[in-house]
Image (tube, rainbow, N blue to C red):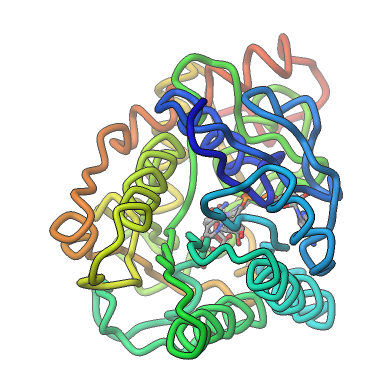
Length: 340
Ligand SMILES: NC(=O)c1ccc[n+]([C@@H]2O[C@H](COP(=O)([O-])OP(=O)(O)OC[C@H]3O[C@@H](n4cnc5c(N)ncnc54)[C@H](O)[C@@H]3O)[C@@H](O)[C@H]2O)c1
Ligand SMILES: O=c1ccn([C@@H]2O[C@H](COP(=O)(O)OP(=O)(O)O[C@H]3O[C@H](CO)[C@H](O)[C@H](O)[C@H]3O)[C@@H](O)[C@H]2O)c(=O)[nH]1
């Protein structure tokens, strides 16, 4: 049997795709998830341990029970707007989660961890593209909690010999290329699934958040990376840890290296779905930076990472296939907002 890897948040969007990729490469993913946002039905490639990462004893027990060789840590709260409205929740779950997890790992003698960080640690950088030397100056509590977690990892590496890789993802998007998994949340804040739910009649109120950004078409620019590429990057990071040796770097951006405006994304969704999508332009969402685009040279050079599925057309096509099959035939009733 392959090495067992504890995957916190494995019942969530990126975690479940990564569990599938781990299993495809002979690892056994052991999902450790409290199912607050995750879905047990997505845990199909290894066992599920129901538990909370803030509970160090439960983490240690899970690592010992399954003899886990490493941890991949996805479990967190990750909505920028919610973090502004309720920062205490974010410090508790994200920072408290890292405290519990690292304590549990030390107790169980597990020293390797891949961590889900975010481009939100950069805030609103003055220059693009963003490389890892760009100052980390987060502009919302979500980004601050993730930066604190990175700092905790660095301190634990220096003091206790924890070996880690922190992956700063840009915008995770798309769906499993076999159509088995996709982005599915009770409350969905992200652009691509929201636009698709709107087209499918499941989300009446859909708008473009801000059309006065200093960008060519006035809408915000993001770097979308396919979730299959993210999953593959976790495998590369994990192998780096399992192989040991001196780390050339520990913190990596993960993006496609290309920026797309909200308007461009919506145009691509209309083209792929064959349905008109005319969204009203509303005000900006608090905390949204105008442009975030990754420089991915370090991940390429040090991890061997290449984004293979992150062309905008591929992202939208996989996401639309999954949404159309999962959320069924379109319903009427979302009114004129969807008509062009
Ligand atoms: N989605 C993105 O675009 C994006 C971008 C950058 C970083 N990230 C990071 O990637 C990770 C995964 O994001 P996602 O979009 O898959 O989120 P998700 O909400 O789909 O998955 C998170 C999972 O963690 C679980 N969880 C939350 N708190 C927990 C706790 N205390 N104990 C145990 N389980 C807990 C949830 O039940 C859920 O299954 C997060 O750490 C997020 O910050 C996501
Ligand atoms: O209904 C919507 C939803 C989103 N947007 C816009 O679409 C862009 C992308 O928004 P998402 O919510 O899809 O993604 P974010 O860039 O806000 O968030 C991503 O980047 C963040 C860091 O900035 C976090 O890491 C977060 O987890 C990750 O999903 C933003 O300009 C947003 O304002 C809309 O116009 N309408």
